[in-house]
Length: 549
Image (cartoon, rainbow, N blue to C red):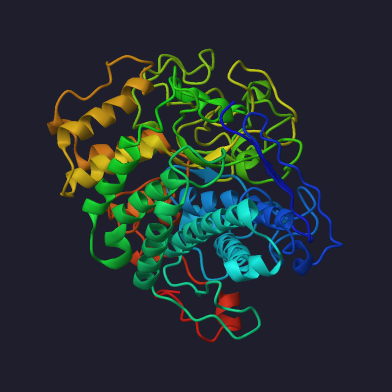
């Protein structure tokens, strides 16, 4: 067991979610007969409402995989937060291509999207929707309003804690908008829906807001690893602050590597997280049970989106990651699914970051005898070169996401998945510390950074030190960028990383089909930001479009 369980049922036409420790049941029982006012009239109602705030990360509506969608005008199957976020962060880079020809999809890797792109538009509205849920909860959870319902004591204290978590989840979504769109509309709980049109904020102002919110809630949240599995605690705050500070130069024009190091140190020195022994167990159906040897509840997951193959059905999240990566000659039984969608592959740029494989015939699944066990790829029937983005056998698919348990046993469903997805895990913090130190942040130490990197690489090499760096001279910024790809590929980081390194746009770094050319070509720097959707520009006269669109 990881931690105690909390049952979070959501009524009032919102979804229902239960976050538990080991079984991780996510219950969906919509009830459209209660009004919002009724929901927020009891302590149980507040718990039910908080379920939607969390549940909107894992579900797309109130009736399973489709029907009664959260967001209108977008294909519900594609409107899951993780799916939209992943598409924008990975399909635009050297790490991923996909066969899908849905509107807007191929424009991402070709880097020719516009303000009507349905994928970036879907993410934009998903993030704003989840912010709206947080704002609504916070409007209803002031001490005065809670007291007016006759709620006091421990129940009132629980609601106050929920409000802190809602503030984090809102800050996280504003970070997503800041990172991808730069200058979105902005509203907090003080803005009443129907009272007017939200103003547009600037990227710099939004950066200041996100940082101030996170710092304000930091001392009030549970200590790291002390909240329920899948819920926010101080560790999540520190992880997001470290990530935000690492990218401060992009967001504001002024770097802040010192603060990135400060929050890495807070998280690492808490001794609340540790690396599990087997990298290949990270993205499996029972990854909620991953713990370090002798570490009790200690894992490397800092905050997760939780899924259940029976009770939280949808076509995004870990379902998307598992089904879309499987096709061709890949053995579906090893993935615990009924059949794949023959979608995702990677380019030779990622493959070439790993050592040579011992074999590519599939006999040493999933890492082909590669000394670096993170190289989980499938080669039989595939070509490394990509003549066609829409042909599955062109490019190398990953085997990283598999909805079987750590002993290979299939789980509760062959159509949906039990695998949780981490929003933050410890190796990212080690890598932030190393990069921020190399970039001159105060309080960092290169020898310490080398030790953190070697922890990651020792695990990657199956406990062997054969892949370790032997000198701080080997610890370069290019090495860190490459190591981030090796450790974190397909986890939603690559676009942000390439922008921070100045190689997402332009022609200094190319990959297959960058800019719509098979060998890759440079693209204009305005594509470092996505456009504000044209639909929102038309609806809100306060909004100005990002340059270039």
